[in-house]
Length: 218
Image (tube, rainbow, N blue to C red; front, top):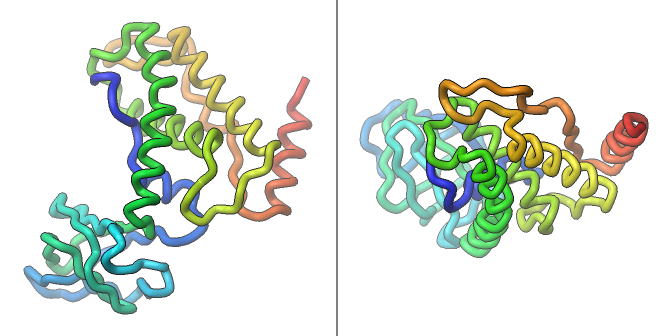
């Protein structure tokens, strides 16, 4: 892999952080080569999917995508995307401005991860299969901790921000010191610390998480 760009995409950021407006499912039309997606189990209007604002609809099965041009409660039309019954899709309710803002956050904070990888010459090898998702998680969490989420989540408290930044800093230190076996064939001293982060979207659960964090302090 090459240490450039970002390690996550805006729709992944939205799926991780945004309270609503991320939808995934399958086309339920039962037809072939349709110009629009049909999913009768979703209300796209209520999910805040809007036409002609730069929201991107992905056909995961066919690996195609395009901007949404028409929306009803159960259908979506996107430029250059056709649908067969059973095709999988995803969409985040991010307009063009929100997508570009999130991408900028991801690009900037990815530099910290690349610097840590470069310290162990892990930029130009073949990464193990779990590495891209783990690095994407660090990228997403660090971006949200440093910058205010633009896609609908409540503004995070200073305490929660500190917890997230501490977690991200710990992972970067482990990358920098070679605790993780990033490249195929390597061995390491440690493993990704997935279990140290709790997420919440309500004041009650956020307070509970902060309390748990304080209890773990030495």
